[in-house]
Length: 511
Ligand code: NG6
Ligand code: CA
Image (cartoon, helix red, strand yellow):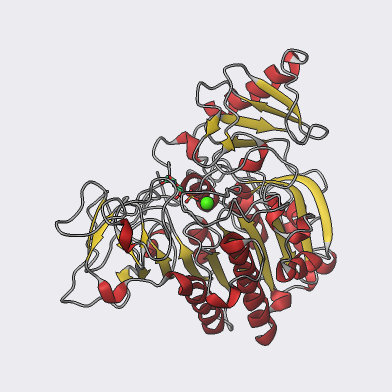
């Protein structure tokens, strides 16, 4: 794998040159700032701009009112690690066997030699930052990190000038912030130890000491080390001063994002702002408590909306609104009970996190990977709705086009220049998208084909229909939004066509 090469991928097409020269686009400064707000587990129906009347997310609505809101946008995968891997590299997760949901002590999945979107911006003279949830491994090898020193390789080695991150997820140890590859607030006399194999002697666990779980109890899994009265996945010991407090996670992420924007107001910047909301354990700040009427899951959605509001406010204050592209999306579809007894199921009421789609996080069905997607560039986009077929994996190709940069002959073989569709100027978008969950699926916007799979029909813990079936599935997703009628037997020709496209994708290799 080469980081850069003289040989160029033929991605640019009628990219930046054509767009930059025309209309409103020409009015904009050459190198707009780019902020990606990557939510965690927020479903298509979880944001009020997408039509559900059960929740109100006004700041996201405001963003939509000045951007392009997409109805047919897709993440590459139905869980975090593989989805984020694809987003940041332009390379499908399923081409590798090691992008499954990462432990908190996983080694770096994106290695320093792999080209990333952060490299792309950095090479274009941007300051680059990653703030919030990471979940793509740190350090060289699983379990090998020095949590008490410099954790290397780290985000600096894959293009991020600045990082302030949680190593994995809020429900996985270590429960600490890592800033520029070092644990924040670490007391030198209280070293941190992490293991995903066995507990440290004398340390309580959710399993053995349920009486210590004063904040949230697990509904499934999550019964290992206890931090702040919540048991997590994995074992950790020490680092008392460095432990995050769950109710301040969103504030901490948001404040660091604001600081990053402030510090870079005079130069182009790329900020990957990955919220912890609304992943489990859901512990929003007390000021959101009870505000949604849906319990902590709904309150965390309001907290997410607050973060969006703070970003918009900061850009306004610094006069950067017109010169900043904001992309708001989510890593995968929604889940209600994801392992803690937080009353999310009981208090959901009529709210449909998945909108009109079937399944959810983990699923081959549409709600697994059909995600919220808004692209806003004030002055260029204008509060429209687009039904174009778009995919997160095109971030790399589209941004390269915007920057007038050619992508190196690297692993980013799956990304396309979709800048025109992302800015609402092309109504069609991609010819098809590939999605991965339990199986691989492909959709051309009208037809969706799911490969046969022997997996379970249900995730019985989260109560999610997984979309696994021993026979191939073909749905007319335009009409049959809920994937109820399998048309495979009636239209084998279409299924074969789509399957052949999938096969062709699978055999594509690095040039
Ligand atoms: C699952 C966890 C779930 C969540 C998920 C990753 C259990 C029982 N479930 O294994 O709670 O952490 O992994 O979510 O442990 S993701 O959004 O980061 O992919
Ligand atoms: Ca997720």
